[in-house]
Image (tube, rainbow, N blue to C red; front, side, top):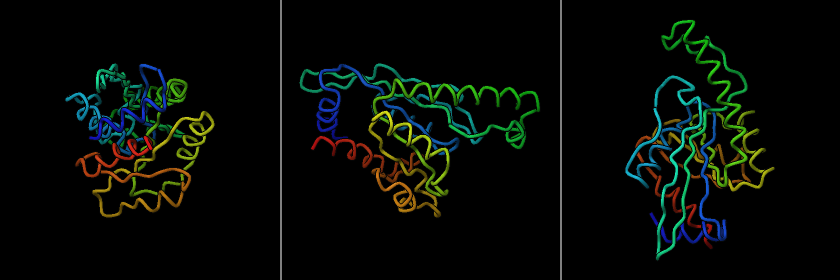
Length: 207
């Protein structure tokens, strides 16, 4: 990872600030937590989030705080934020399909709804956003449009992560066509494929 270039970019972006927060946003089940674990492990040696095939596994903001980035005697502190998946509607019946009992599914749906509200509120605390999208699915969804619109309105730097590129139906070009105003990086958070390019894309902003 080109830490020196990333460090210079972050310094240029945040000036004399000593810390920043990197938030991962997206629909449920696009691989945000898998990517968060990959980034966290690369920079700290430890994973941070639970991963499951059941949607809305992450139902509150998961934080890996005070990650130290040091270079030439200078230091920045990063807070890595894995956000709950954002959806326009949460139906408890969706969880019953995965074997949850009705009462448990209803409780999970309530927690997921609260998580969506929490994720939106946390936009106020995010300095850089990775918007994760499932590259096998149509990216032009109301959720993606809403997330990007909110980030753009706040002037928060955005990199779109086209995840699940290890799957045959994945297409990064489909995402680029949908959102040409943003840079798209194709990765597989599961296998680690091309995650290095994600770091290099950040570094590229150092100019």
